[in-house]
Length: 274
Length: 236
Image (cartoon, rainbow over all chains, first blue to last red; front, side, top):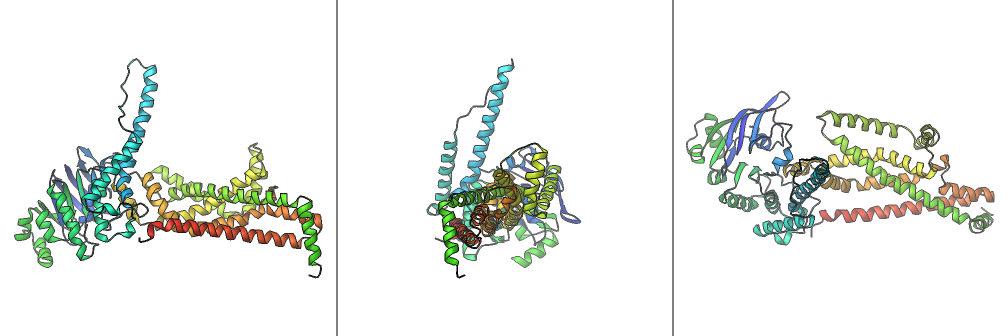
């Protein structure tokens, strides 16, 4: 689903990612592990172009999204991202956090369709070659109602429906992260990118977040997770990438990586963290 | 101060019997119009400039807009507002052949002037918002513009409201120079009373009190707004 080809990223003189080529297939759950500074997060952030790659291609659904001419916003709708520090919108209630993107993007598309229809109507008057209008089978109110309903369903799923109208400042870290996850889900993404989703949580809240991620994994969601939770990586991932100094040093099943790592750097890292 | 009663009497006479109060009311109205509409204009233009200034400058257009904004801020912060008023009213508008009432010119000049200050206030406000907020919006597929306007700017405004209130207060006080181009503000009204009674002490004192009351009211208003904007911070 995502093809990464010769991805390089450098900040000035510093090469953070050195020529990475890999493929993420539908349904895979990929855990990226490695020492800090190895480029894990940068790699993940390049996948949805939060960091623009210096060179190389990222083919998502047949489009090279690393190309600056591509409208990245359209492709990001299908790639959810969950951050280490949750990044819930502080000025919005929980339900508005979840609804914001679906409503805005729905309304934007509706506006664009209407605008284009206006143009088509105008042009059809003068042109012999009549073009059909876009069918418009929704309305502002309906987009909002549907987004709200979807958001409530998602909140019920994580058992936080009663917090719908509270602000993020009233929530615990674990609750915030679970809401951040369903906020990403509200766009019906094809892939979820997790950037150390449990690193900023109190130990007792890690479980609830990992449980939710596990549920999503079991439902077949494609996901890429940068994590320090080795047990979780081993249990949930279908593939583990070990990164070191901007390269993918080892790319294998969790069993093989955790029981018989090949590369000396992997061995050294795992002996420290396990 | 022995003849203070007499002075008060004189003031009262002009104030009530010679239509002084009507002039004061018009003056008060004009002062408020210039300050409020000026600030609204300033916030609008200032926010726009602030957004231009914080937008990443990879491409040519943002670079040009940014350079223009820097020039604009430099221009309007670099000259006193009196000079701007005089130049606008007596030089610039006649030059382009536009004839506007003094009050409208004042509103525009005060708006443009406060935009320069508001833009800097707003810029610091925007920079104070956690960059993660912008990232989260962008990661959901929202455009830079939408994320800026729906997420970042509202939080920035909350952070800078006290400073913005300060700007409003100085704007109210700065309106006292609009008589330079012939707009009738509070100063003009009390000067009228003073020169008609040959007695300036009481009128100027009353003028000072009116300014103090105005600004106390403004400060109260700002406090109320701050409190309502703090809603999302409260735990409940």
